[in-house]
Length: 74
Image (cartoon, rainbow, N blue to C red; front, side, top):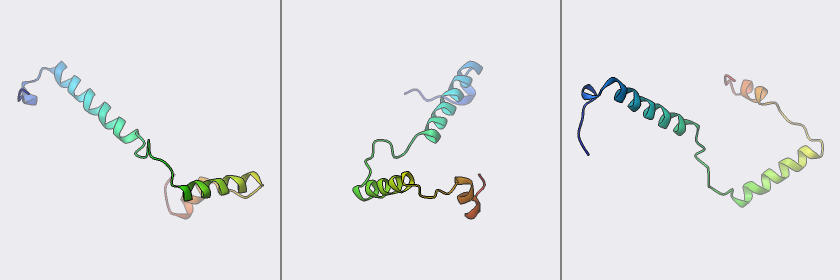
């Protein structure tokens, strides 16, 4: 690898480098850190019970209400 300094780059090379850095950062921020992982069996059961309760007419709480209760900005 050739050592170079930012000062040695052309404007176009610098722009290209910045585009790469921004693209990598956005991908890191938007990627799912749990992608590829499997749910534990106990969590699957909890989710199935939750879905069944909703289908049976159970009450849901809007995300906005939960955020407000926790003092979060939505």
